[in-house]
Length: 82
Image (tube, rainbow, N blue to C red; front, side, top):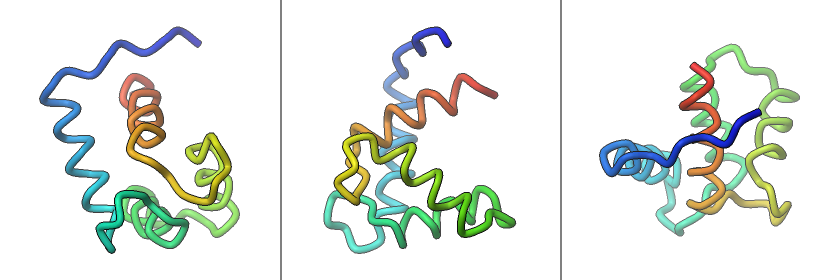
């Protein structure tokens, strides 16, 4: 897989808005429950196993939460896939 292009300022602002939407408690990270809610907005039929697998993929440092940097990296991959 090739390295994704950097996001434009507008794209990055959209990613920030999505991150803040998902970070329901506003603590600066996305916990599993928040990720599950976001993923089910994007894919309403996602199973619990799919949500868990997706969380594990995005949480690259395996600390149990998704930082903004991890979210951006995921979004860049998703952005260029479609």
